[in-house]
Image (tube, rainbow, N blue to C red):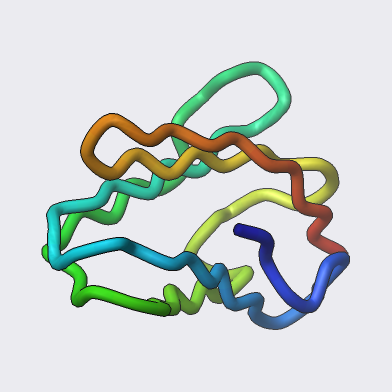
Length: 82
């Protein structure tokens, strides 16, 4: 799981692969741990994509995101340039 492009200035796409259809939650945080955006939905088996626009986040610089799906949790870093 990683967002591309990274760094980005207009939008980025976070791609992730699920072994079966299930609920997943993506949460984006700033460097202080403040939640900037949360997206929860049911996603299909296989590769899924979530597009984030910089205007949705309301922050620039280094941000962190976490994907939770079933027993799986992953954390990554992304950089936003405005």
